[in-house]
Image (cartoon, rainbow, N blue to C red; front, side, top):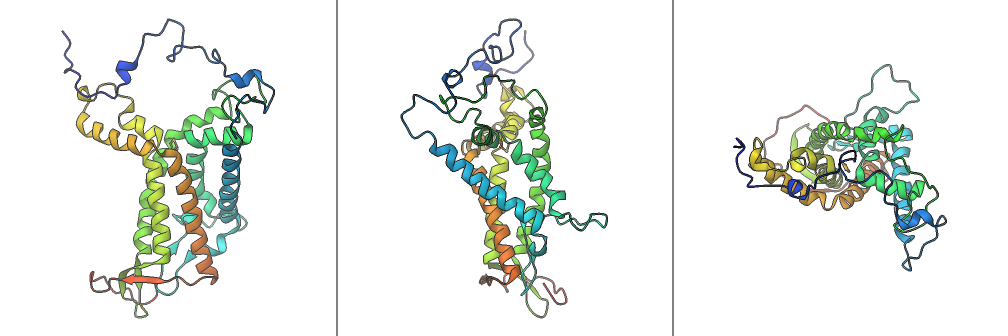
Length: 306
Ligand code: FES
């Protein structure tokens, strides 16, 4: 008789599992066994009658513009990553946490030391992989559209085998999130000319809050996280802390339904927050102070400056 408690909560994975014939991978089919229509068609041709090319075109434009901006800001924008005037303390998310060791050559931007994490996280993200494989490698450019290549080896060879590092980038991204939320607290903390600090809301506070908030949703909706918190279980009631894991898995699953949306909104919001901080720092725009809560919290005097 089994010593396991009866299955009460399940992700459905167990019930969906079918026996797999010996010698076959867990999917039950050999890699490349089932080919899409597009494989036999000349590149770019299709029997589809809809405007199938619009989506990849828009995605390509979005990626080129936002990634182009992010690269420019990270490589060449080190002069205006911070705005600490008029009692404000805004730090561009591309430069957080700000690390500038003495050994770093002057021609190398300190942002690059940090960006390895968000860049690696996005580059190995399941959604972005789909997007850039389609728009930059045309592999496939869309469903049922002719492909340029006729062979497919999956992500088992270098460099694509590195996509499997996604889970480790997720761990690092979660650590970064805590630091970014600390930046949000600083962005909502102002100082007057005497150095007294008080909570308030400025335009930059909202830009940095939006950036970190959307990054949080993007990270929490990650497919790897969903797998980690419960997706890999087929019986929650048999697992340690099954109840809380089931709840967490449900929340992550809800967020995961909109992972593509979080991916785009968070990328746009990070670029916008950097641009906002940069324009304030360059004196191009003046940051509005929208509200202050000077008497709500009695914060310590810091002796001048923000
Ligand atoms: Fe997109 Fe993990 S799958 S962030």
